[in-house]
Amino acid sequence: MGRQRLGRSFGWLWSAYAASTVGTWLGFGAFPLLAIQVLDVGPAAVSALAAAGLAVGALLALPLGPWVDRRRKPAVMIVTNVVRCAALLSVPIAFWLGLLSYLHLLIVSVVGAAASIAFTAASGAHLRSIVRPDQLLVANGRFESTLWTATAVGPTLGGAAITLLGPVVTVVANAVGFLLSALGIGMIRDSGPRPAANRPPRPAGGGAAAGRPRRDDLLAGWRFILADRELRRLFLNTVTVNALIMATEPLLAVLLLGDLGWAAWQYGLAFGLPCVGGFVGAQLAPRLAARHGRRRVLLVSGVLRALWPVGLVLVVPGTAGVVLVIAVELALITCMGVFNPLFATERLQRVPADRIARVLVAWRVAGAGTIALLTALWGVLAAATGARAAIGLAGAALLATPLLLPHRGSGKSPRGEPVPPPLAAVR
Image (cartoon, rainbow, N blue to C red; front, side, top):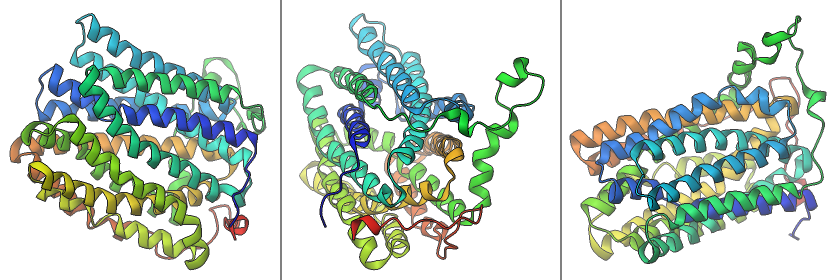
């Protein structure tokens, strides 16, 4: 199978994605680390930081679906990257001035969450406009490979940088990544179809009412998801799985960095090295789908990714604990590397072009809200039972999530349009 050329516009979009992703994963765990080591807060406050940032950011992002639909997607991506860059740079400035506070970290988390939702919606819609339907799986596979490559390298380098240069150096790297991403997006010359062509009718009368998102606009994404049985089940499964996994992230930081006394480099290594599996999985996804069928591979990888996190409850101090976390994360991330590009392709192909931004915003808002809710709940649970027990309960809950996966597909979108085969270009 030869390597496909997806065009110059995709190349710039991919480069911009790589820059922001590398920066993000260099800063992996930076906010929990600052909260624990600089501000000296406990597990409930660390979980609340992540939960509140996601919840409020999701609320702020709620009206962004219609807003993104009516604007050129590269412009939206540039603005959101610049906003995230500026917000992150305020953290090291406050730290160096001795003014860093828990509230400051919370505000930056909120801004970053809202901007991230808008960026994801715009980038998904723009990807659909610059590559053919039969190229989507290949394109999503390249994004997924880039994600896991950055995740494999970023936390390890970030942990070493924090050890050598202090706790805010990776926050600066994250901000620079968003700035480089904005510059890369600015090089895209194909801005896709004009938004006006897909703009829904506005209420008569103009004025303020015409400029505000209507309730129907805000709910359109969820209505579309719930009307499609396949999307609905994928929605419930992915939102639940992601929330249960992310709810344990701050608790793992507390358990490993606090209770078990891991060094920052050990923490980065344990979560960075297994991401090689994500790269391998993303490379295998098109080949496995071509050989065994996309639906079967999607289902099997979706089931397998839910089986491993419960093993984290057995983590111990020292080298044995590091090896255990690496093994569990390697198995989990390899399965995710296969599942994610197949899932992303299925979602994009089932949604009409004029609704992509709204569907993606609705998906991300629901995902962020669920992560926030479960993160807060698991923080309270950890305060009552301990971080280890709470992590084990999350892993046990994940074992039931394969029941939400779609088992049979209609092959059609809610409009009755056939879903195009994504594998023609990779055979």
